[in-house]
Length: 153
View (tube, rainbow, N blue to C red):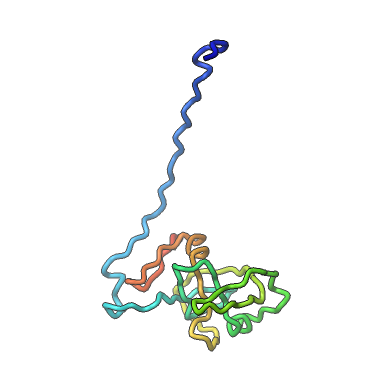
């Protein structure tokens, strides 16, 4: 053991405790189930505003990290092939089939209460997954058939 430096210099200061910011509590209550048929095992499907349009039949998939827009909605939003950026990683479905994606796109998405439907022919227009849920700070509840998120309103 070296005694070259005083003992106090060998000590490291303990880190300062950081302040923890507490946001609003997002909770679900029995009254949140009003309007739903109970008991149920339905998928959580919501309406989101995507690129300025209110889009119905958006599946909230808490078990996936892939977010998917189906071609009918892509066309309904008047998106063009040059709006896409390259995406080289294929998706593998539950049936083991490999799907090669056309590309990826970033679009503004907002949750709203008002509903105006955009024409789409698939059972779901979009699938949002964990990345969107985490980015929005949402708390989904399949029991209550709702997604809650912090907002000013």
